[in-house]
Amino acid sequence: MRTFMDVHSGFIGVTADQLREAHDRDLAIEGDEQVHFERAWLDPEAGKVFCLATAPSKEAVMRIHERAGHPTSEVYELTVEVA
Image (cartoon, rainbow, N blue to C red; front, side):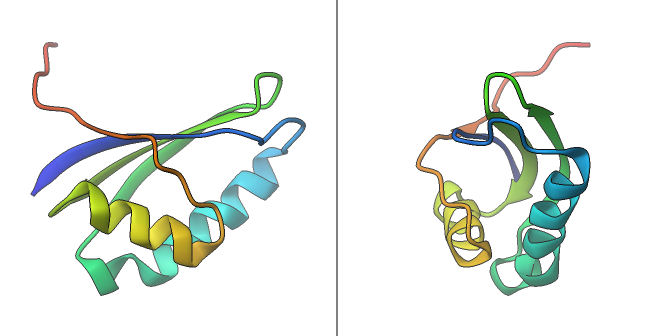
């Protein structure tokens, strides 16, 4: 599986509970596309959400987010990692 980070905009003022609800919608259907969302982060002031996932393709990540009600076209494959 490949690793992806995606970015969502328009989440200004969203709470941690609302982020959890959105993340849970992804988790409920992620298996349909062999995607696994590892974690999500929120910057409510900037209105940005960042999601870390493993998946067979960026398109699979995009399809799950679309179906879950929070589409994004901003998906990046993470091919280089340092610790």
